[in-house]
Image (cartoon, rainbow, N blue to C red; front, top):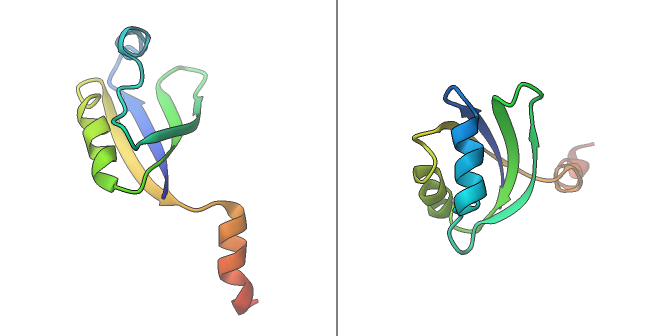
Length: 89
């Protein structure tokens, strides 16, 4: 399953980037990073993550929640959405 993760950094983004530099993404095995974008003010990150077990997301979030607030939104690709809606068109 794909998830859109919206991270809002708690204040200064430097500690977030420092931890990432020093420890990496801290994702458990089975949670795969797909892509990400960051706002120009460096206060939010939008990531696509993929996994079969939603508990892996919670494990990852627990490793970052001291520095970041998270919103998790299950998503599908545009092609999957088009295929799902096609019978109703």
